[in-house]
Length: 242
Ligand SMILES: [Zn+2]
Image (cartoon, rainbow, N blue to C red; front, side, top):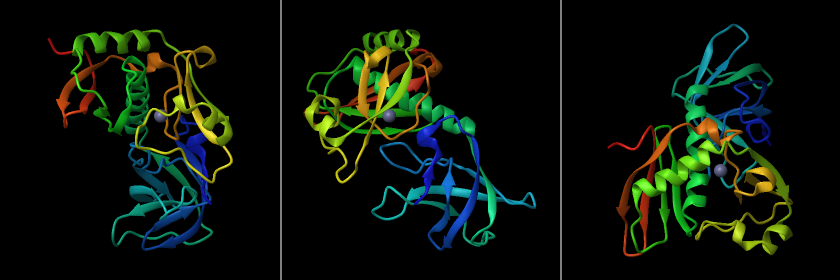
């Protein structure tokens, strides 16, 4: 089991770690700041710093098969391997992660600006896409203005833990049409926006900025038709091109 530092503190850029296991699949640490690919957010990049100052470059981060518990840090073929029990310092590429945090939080805002069922989503450091279950298209300028109002409102973003029973009693919290809330867990992480979650709350395990103002200027870049009842929207950084 890997202690997931990013769940408690999305702003942690480094952490001390001890190597728990090493295999062809990757390096397992006792704790990590590296977000593992899940929920539409890609894993972090970065490196592990050894006691002699040398670096082990991390090429991918994922959960071990079927688990949300053990995180594997993937490395290049032929890279030097650490020893089990070795102490390291884990460093993420913070510039990239912060862009992912801004983009990911922007996706939550779009689900507020456009409160329709979501059929898919993916975050990247340059743009994000969300697929909505909708038959009509939307106005890019109008949606961009709604998004920017939420950004400029500088609402706080925080997490709260609830029980599966509380989630079952509030099915409206789940906005993804095809994603079932996790089963077999004793608590679920809600990401809330605004005082008392007045703007939004939804289950999410990703990393987010702490205030919506930190997202900065964003716009709806492209709206594509993907099937009769599906529209794919892209969020990009910067102002809406004229
Ligand atoms: Zn999220």
